[in-house]
Length: 76
Image (tube, rainbow, N blue to C red):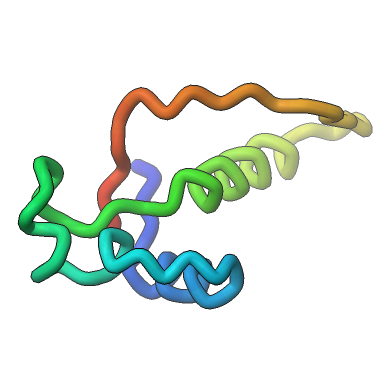
């Protein structure tokens, strides 16, 4: 099972400059339909691509990426 901790999201928030409370503040995010902090979409994509690419033995170059966010991913 893949999970992303609240601490990882806080670090990404500092790096990206996206300080939206929806990503790390439980008392703020409880007012939305997901009821808990959610992972930054870009962070999720970076982690997924990193995981995928680290398993590849050949040189793979990605020159563009289309991403449709169809659901949310909660911080653990």
